[in-house]
Image (tube, rainbow, N blue to C red; front, side, top):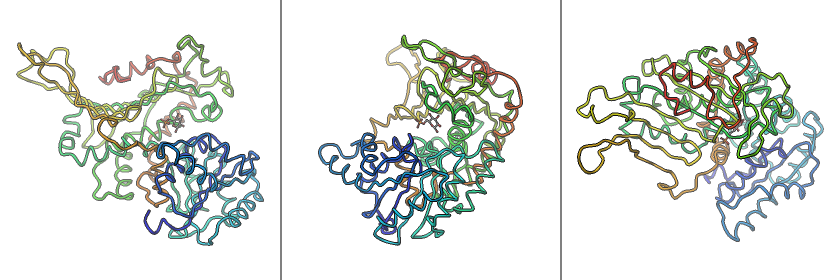
Length: 492
Ligand code: BG6
């Protein structure tokens, strides 16, 4: 680590006993610890409602830490040393005295007064503001941007439309300045997405073709073969558009469609993402198809439908599936449909970007190209990270025959390095103060502007989402939408 980041560090996880903290935040911090990427003097203070002692909480954490970066015996030693740096303070989120307990505990344990502090709010958005104010009120937030600094990491959803998001941004700014605020969209930490700018702008072969003259359509699809069980209460208030589309998919779209930056830094990257987001026409219901999964048998097991999930009202209209066609109204993209699709309860788990090039119009091979599709660049974000380009090739021998083949870059074959979890990369960036992969407030506003009108229109309508059985490939509505725009339904 560089000298600045060797300063003492306390990471404070609010909502420490929750799923995200146990499964992602602590394991990512442990991964960074194993790679020697945390300062010598660092501690983690967990705060949440469950009454654990330090020892009991460490036992909970231990079950979630993995030895990816330190296989063998050394892992046990590292794990022990890491857990000894994990402290726990129980308290109610709304109780100001509880934050004074946290303050007291931190001061008792920290050996220095000059400690950098990273607050990770792993809590429901409805209590972000109260918790931020309580932290500020307890004197836990240093206003300095340089060392010793205090920074806050918050998780989406940031509001539920443009107005509530603005309100949240304003409220949080009363405690943490924009420069101290790190809004996470964990998809930006995924390796393949971090590679997108490199692929587009560090290789000569793509950029000249990356426009409406050569690209016919872009499809970005996100599928999960899971139900919302366990978080249906949250999900029912937000739905798939707010949960996945307005953030993860829009960020993928921005990275796919943005112009090159004049400099590789957070400000320039963000400016370009915002520019392209602002060129997207606000979405309307006629360019969308919404669905909700119903119960079905999957591998001989009965899976309940969305409406049968605990905490979901029987008449819920919350979509678990959404397909939308977005139009980017600028010179590069005018006329190219961007179809984005997100769904839970589908047949598989997959996130990918498909860039379909225009067909070769006239070719001396015309008679031999029957049945072949146009070139397609597929960027597989997960699982099995990879990038492949569909090209035509001559089958060896005669007579001349052409075959669709793939130039294939599979991460596990090409790279020896482990692919870090998105949270590892993002937490490390937050510690370094690098905001390139975080969402700035004006970017957030631009993202909400695309979806707010359609969300309000859906809320005001009494239309029902289309039913689809759990385990489906997609909905009929999505297929019809794809056909309407001349897109391939195979990619859904
Ligand atoms: C979260 C959504 O942001 O991303 C979840 O709230 C979703 O609904 C999750 O399941 C998917 O993340 P990943 O990294 O497992 O694809």
